[in-house]
Length: 181
Image (cartoon, rainbow, N blue to C red):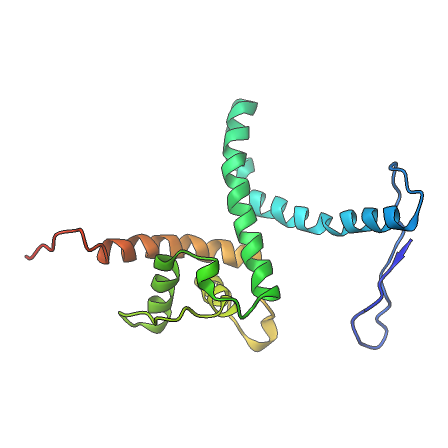
């Protein structure tokens, strides 16, 4: 049995109580804590699964062999992990520079689009702010009561940002010849 220690404040909010059943051996407190920690990670796997189903649309693909599915999943899992990691990091490391998480061209394209400016700043914005901008590209309204963006709007926003970044790179490629006319 595991009981939530620091529950949310509020009238009538009871702490969470988990009664976990397992076939794994639990002979001491440390083993019990380990099993509870494993179970606590289960939610992240659920989110990864949701991203694979809703964002990557794995179920809609008509792959005829397990080998093809395995190849597609190997790429899609990286995408799903990236989305979950961005979402989680924006909450846990909000002041982290976005340059630690996105390539330079990507955050610069985002900043210039959001601010309708041609030249990005030298200092990258904070991760939380950048993730909110990306999610807004995907339909997140960013109202005060909305809380933080989720994986669905982040997924949709990243699709938009990828297209913007390709255009940004095209326009800022110094090796391309300028054409007039």
